Amino acid sequence: MKILSRFFTISFVLVVSVSLLAGCKKTRDHSTFLGVKVSEIEAELGSLLQTWYPQIMDTIQGGYWTNFEYDWTLSKNQDKMLVTQARGLWTASRAAVVYPENPVYRKAADHGFQFLTEHMWDEENGGFYQYYYTDSSQTVDPSFKLTYGNAFALFALAEYARINKDPAVLGWVRKSFYWLENSAHDPLNKGYFNIILPENIAESGITAQDAIQRAGWGKPEWKDQNTSIHLMEAFTAAYQVLPEEPVRTRLNEMLVLIRDTMVNRSGYLNLYFSNTWEPLSNHDSTREYILMNPYLDHISFGHDIETAYLLVDASRALYGNTDKATLTIAKELVDHTLSHGFDKNYYGLLDKGYVFTPGGKTEIIDSTKTWWSQAEAWHALALFSGLFPREPRYQEAFQAMWQYIRNELIDHRYGGWYNNGLDKNPENRTFQKAHQWKGCYHDGRALFQVLSYTAREKK
Figure 1 (cartoon, one colour):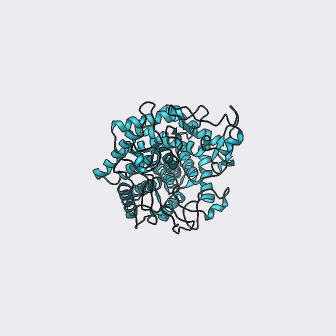
Figure 2 (cartoon, helix red, strand yellow; figure 1 turned 180 degrees about the vertical axis):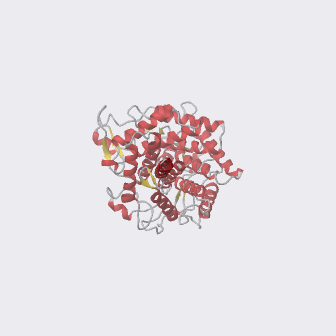
Figure 3 (cartoon, rainbow, N blue to C red; figure 1 turned 120 degrees about the horizontal axis):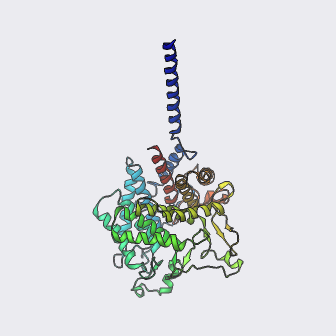
């Protein structure tokens, strides 16, 4: 009986052990991430990259083609903008890191780097030109440069330096950083000016005022949220390949300015500021004027939630982890966006909001659901689901946003993403898939980031 009893005891232990192992295996099942199938994310990233590369490589004039129609036929106009070229380089460089076995992405990155540095850099005054005109005897406009575009050039060059260890590439990172430092930085009040005019502007044959109008980025003395967050993004990337004190100093400066000055007490970012960081506002104007002139003053939900991610990323680059003050503000940005910027049941992120009366409710003034803000929101929600796992609404919103992206943004016939969600803008089915403000940077970055989180979870 003792032998029989011992047999049953051992058998029971074995059964329990197998059950526990099976349970462990189940909890370690990595086929889903936050309730979303990893295979779906992987498939969409592969499809997106293969849709864009190598198709966007301009083998005639160099760099990347700018404009494609809804079915990926080339558009007639192919003028090149700095931001688009830089984003194409960044995405190809990141893809080369993620898929080192595929030579297409490294080749596309080399191709983009060559054009950017050989054709868009101003050899006389430094800095990258905003445009390269393909059907004009004058290929560039030397009358102005935009800090925003140069920030993206630095961002892309830093990413490219991760796959090309040639010291000359790192030299371009350094050269781009110091042009911003010497030409755009405000040493008195900190931060960066948006528009840079050359000292010899008279030789361009136009006035400074004409150049400012061409630039189309407000007044030269203004500072703005959009330029600032992407400078912080660029410095974050640059510091990882060029860990020098001047880069660290400017990265820290931008993090603190954005966190402590640009985010207001209500938990969202003001858009434009004077050179002394006074927020510019339309609040003293009529409702009609505010609605007719939102560019200067509105709540940009996409930029807010994107900034939350960028703040965390910058803090980690500086300190190795997210400091408490930065995490607090980043969470405020995400929570404000979740509370005021999403459609019902988190089915898509709306574009613009406004608070018309002090202490009043946030009203939606533009319900468009742009592709880039959906992408930035989605991967930021994945990040904050990991940072705050006991708060389920981050995961709920992440899941809902993925369904929104699959149903309303991805073109399952021709590939790529629509400009805006079809639920709000069904006419987008036949809009251009690519143009000077639309590459595969936002959607590509979102997919890269989320897959990087799934990989960490496997370890």
